[in-house]
Amino acid sequence: MVDKLIEQHGRRLYGLCRTLCANPVDADDLYQETWLKVIRKMDLYNSSYEFEGWLTRICVNIYRDNWRRKRIGLFFDGFATQEIKDAVMENVAATDKPDDHEPQDAVNQLPEKLRITVLLYYFRDMDINQTAQALGIPPGTVKSRLNTAKKMLKEMLKNEIEL
Image (cartoon, rainbow, N blue to C red):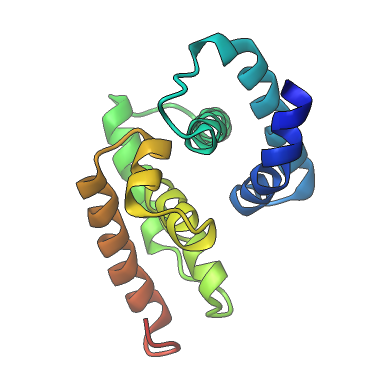
């Protein structure tokens, strides 16, 4: 059964992993971790939902968990609360400027929650509802994040492209 799922969804999942990760080795690890978790949690899958949305959500959650661990490991935790640390980290990510004004580089400079939303919606061709399901957030939040991301990208690229 898993072989059939991998055959049906593996290529698209690997594309998502490559989109999320900075290098192929991390993408390979994410791909394998995702399938291992799918195998372990298969009994929790609700067949009334699309399998690809469930698979995408697992992948994105694993990516987020790994990203948080890396981020926490890189910095001394001198912040009073996790909320303060998250706010500082998002502001730092939001103020970084892309080096060569390429759209993909600009997307990579977005705060993580906006970047993932943009990647799923625009680069993985998911609609608002599929993106919301994959991220576990309401459709209105997806729309809001996309709008915020567009504004930030427009500012970053300053007339380089017409969004």
